[in-house]
Image 1: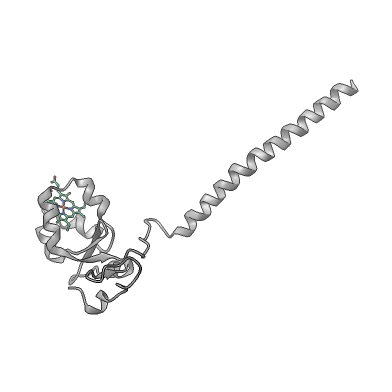
Image 2: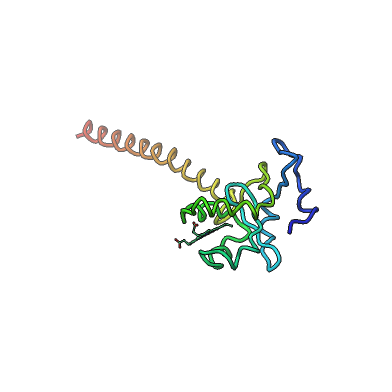
Length: 147
Ligand code: HEM
C-alpha cells in the first residue's frame, strides 16, 4: 500500500487538489515489486498488485506496464465499462500534474536536438542550393559572353 511518505510528495503544487494524493512519476516507477505494483491510467495511479492474478487478460500484460503509464495499452484493448469500474478499487492517487511524464525511448533532450538538426537542414540546404545555382548561372553567362 501507499506509504504516508509517498503520499506527501508535493500535493501543494500549482493546481493540486488537497484531497488527492499525488505521486511523482519517479515514485510510480519504483513501485514495481512483489508487494506493490503501480501503474498510471489517464493520469490516475493504481496499485494493481491484488489484481494481478485476477486479470482476465493475464498477469503478463500488467507486468509489462508496471511502474509506467498504461493508458495507451489499456485503451488499445478496448476494456469494457465493467473493467473501468473495477479500476476504482485500486485507485491510490493521481500522477502529479506538474511532473513530466517520462517519454518512452529516452529523455526530451535528444529529441529536441534532432528537431533543431532538422530545422538547420531545412534552412541551410535551400540557401546553399540557391547560392550554387547563382554561381552556375553567372559562370554560364560569362562563358556565353566570351564566346
Ligand atoms: C488495473 C487495470 C486493468 C483492469 C481493471 C483490467 C480489467 C480487465 C477486464 C475486466 C477484462 C475482461 C474483458 C473486459 O471486461 O474488458 C480485461 C481483459 C484484458 N485486459 Fe485488462 N485490465 C487492466 C489493465 C490492462 C492493461 C494495462 C492491459 C495491457 C495490455 C490489459 C490487457 C487486457 C487484455 C489483453 C485482455 C483480454 C481481452 C480479450 O480477451 O478480449 N489490461 N481486463
